[in-house]
Image 1 (cartoon, one colour):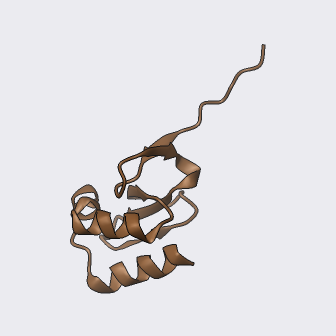
Image 2 (cartoon, rainbow, N blue to C red):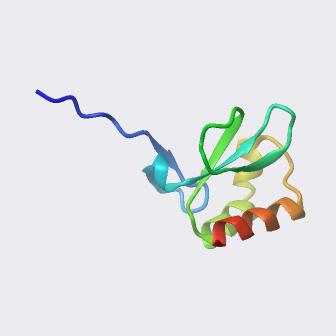
Image 3 (cartoon, rainbow, N blue to C red):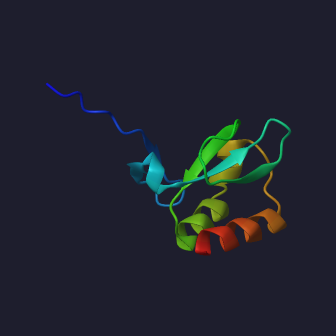
Length: 88
């Protein structure tokens, strides 16, 4: 009998729907306090997950879910960088 490997799931902070971890984009707060996009999903730090849609990103920012989840203030420049990265 073959073992079926369990796929980790995460919840998108925009639409609040659970997806397989690989389908989402990770935003990470690094140990030094900076926030950046983690496309590999392997960087060390506190992570938050979001769909690959700009609508979900806007919704998560407007409701301050990313800020609350990462426990850090998000700058306007970072929001623009995240939007540009997700749209590409």
